[in-house]
Length: 140
View 1 (cartoon, rainbow, N blue to C red):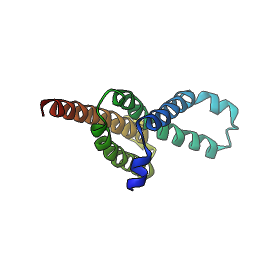
View 2 (cartoon, rainbow, N blue to C red):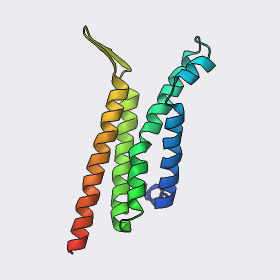
View 3 (tube, helix red, strand yellow):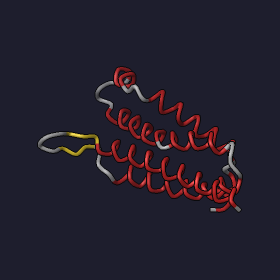
């Protein structure tokens, strides 16, 4: 696990998260893929949905990676551990949670909602942690 953590440097994480964010933005208009693939190819459409969700997880990481170019390396090293915890919880939730939840009043794409909530929650928790640790390091 330490070798994997050490492999992620600031620049590598920035590059991976940038490419994933671009991948999400390219896959975002799914109408393109619905017209390209035959309507009988549900596997292709489902794999595009899963790719979108996986790429969406990297959007807050990309924003935070830009921020990490300006903070101390110790704070980045501590944050990397929370990134792996977030990734594990995010992928586990994508694997377990059903796509659709049908109710009498509304029908929502539950997996996407949970993925968005996890991404936004991770972003704000990480941002708070970064600010707190930066202020704590400056006081010492």
